[in-house]
Image (cartoon, rainbow, N blue to C red; front, side, top):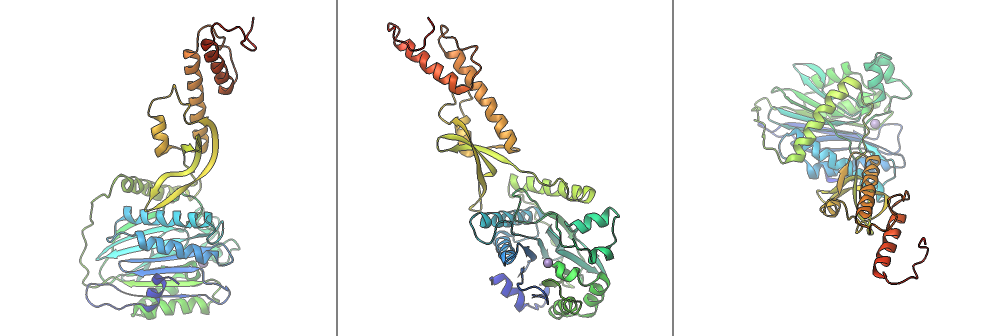
Length: 413
Ligand code: MN
């Protein structure tokens, strides 16, 4: 398994201003794989709960954790942490496309960064972050799950959700939609607070009051993580169980948040993530899917791709959708820089928008050809597509060349 997971198993108990922490993951009593993965790389801590069957969930959660660790910022910055989670999402999607793991595999991701009193949490799925503050347990994250939606709309209670047959249905995960973004929570915590990150194998088996009393009772963070996992197993261990416990040092200094924006993308991501938090709170996780697309040149034609053009951190996040049939060197009549922009990828909101744009181009090209064709040729009433237009244009050119010839084929007398 990954270094991140081994580091988690070792744990560490630093003195002074460094937080002390502990972690444990366990397969549980029912499953035959442990599809949970975790990272304990201070100041970064993360839990990912994979899904996909036949061990693919383990692959998905491991790829997500490794990509997160590789891309995580050094300080608790919401924008930058969101970007690392986005990179993790793209890495899982790309792995499935490349045949690593399985198509349809996915994972949750609950990632936290803690420096001094500054805590930032990024959330996708139904793993959770909790904070113990002055002896009482507060949940930081909102689940992206069917149960959360049903509880919030008053259709079932939290107790009913615990035994509901669809309790594991999640409404947002890494590995399916390239435009998925995490919810971001940023806050200042207090010296002596305790952070818990866990998979649903803990929160689904052990109720909040027992989590709270255990977090209060077991002072050593490593022993506490082990005790929490043991409680989930005692309760039946129906799922893989993972817990990370991090203590905010009692002498923690408030760390002034570094406000340097690392560029426009980070700012845009932060804005979108913020809006999503609002939307998520207000309207659940419905209507989240959004498929962006772009136009670019492929095999000499204008082609539609899904995803985003270019690459981020060496990864590409797109796949070919279809060829539009429009030749890339037949764009006369369009603005001069279109072909240049195609090389970079022209972003649109959806595949339908891409097709609509190409249709507009085809009309403009046809108009251009009509306007430049010799006036003697009957082109203006030609209702056919640009194929007919271009063959007429070719004929027109031919006829212009052979003005003195009377062998023009099919020419109306
Ligand atoms: Mn689980």
